[in-house]
Image (cartoon, rainbow, N blue to C red; front, side, top):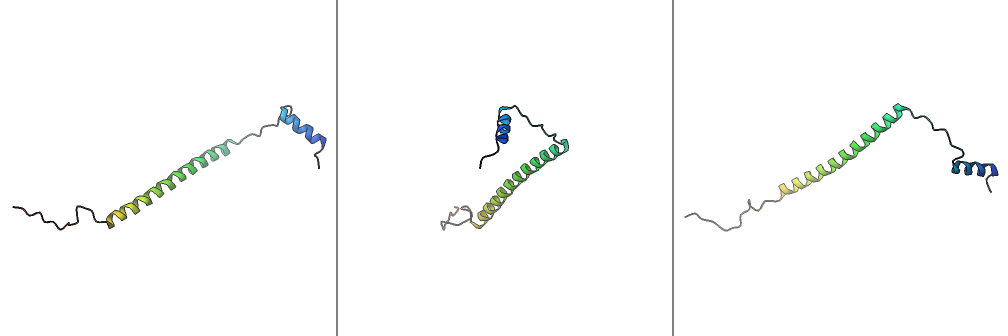
Length: 82
């Protein structure tokens, strides 16, 4: 089914710039709220990344505590002082 000829003509006029829609006014408060929302979302994303890094560090530090360090283990060789 084809659209009515009138609709086709209107679309062509819009495409060619003959018909221009009236821009709706944007509420300044809504713009400010959207900007604040974007900022909060960016902060949230950064905090999630920081949290993930901290969790990795905590796991790393816990693993380091479990492993004995090379300097604290005895090799069996005695270094007697004379």
